[in-house]
Length: 423
Image (cartoon, rainbow, N blue to C red; front, side, top):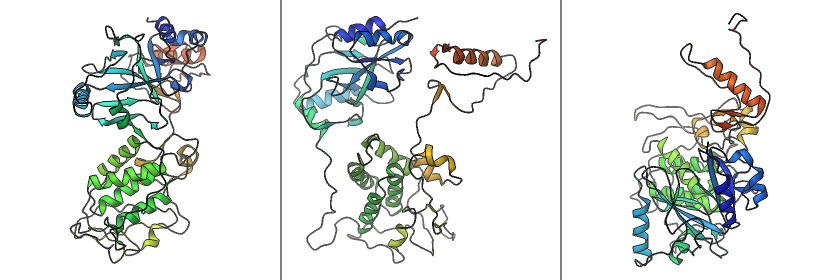
């Protein structure tokens, strides 16, 4: 059994804000890294939460620390990416780095810990934005503990250094600007497709449903012949405008927007003919035209239906004719608000809605293993399923451990319909 409390107290003495995590890196505190502390009394009070797990280290403006995560797995080579950046951006001048730890994942990546820059610009977590194998941890945390190795002369108590200026410029951005008006080419017409700008403007109108709308916009652009790079430009424009549009909720990050775009691209096929006599459906647009007009049957009012979202037609062969469902009066095909509040009452789901919906984080009976709700345990006879369930019930009833993981204390009832007093 590993007890991380001594290391956690040492990190605290070195100025770090820490909190307990499981071996799966999932926080064991209610609010994750927001609960991180550098108060020894608080750290000691977490007691058994430090056993058999990892230590989370807060990386944020509050903590005064930022980490550069060099990821060396799944085909990524963060160390090589870092060397290329130092050469290309820093003129080959070696970067003075304080604490460095080697991670246990894959071929072993590295965490480079720096002093958080004293600037007003926003620094967000990013993954693969600076370079494919480089993540920035500036509003979250990294882990340490068993399997991690602080490097010689670069331990956690080593002095902190500043980020190189070239990296600061790469990872910072100014405050979110006002909505960007589409540019003109001098005669009033737009150099980008009018149809693309119409779709983009309609997406901004539905910005209270960010994931769903981003998914819809991606598919509309794809169906109309836009390339992936053109779609990404629209998606990033959309993300910048709606990032903090919902007070009290997590920002709609660049990573989340691009992930939603990729989901939409994977679930769609461009260049297919569509048919819908009652309203506009995407048609193939000849992108060789400098400023293509929308198709003749384009009806902008259809984009302003009760849902504001054009429903997806099914794929069809070129010689097929299909009828596409259009919203009836008062019908809304898109989720409204949080799925936890609305989705449970929704009797009809479109596939693209499921792809793009913001589902709430699950509540766990056993963290990251067994969610609260209906679960099924199956296996061959005499494997010990019943004993396993009894152990789970005992752990829940006593607030003990199940499969080595701490379980929140609660009520447990076991109904053994196949058992008897005879055994």
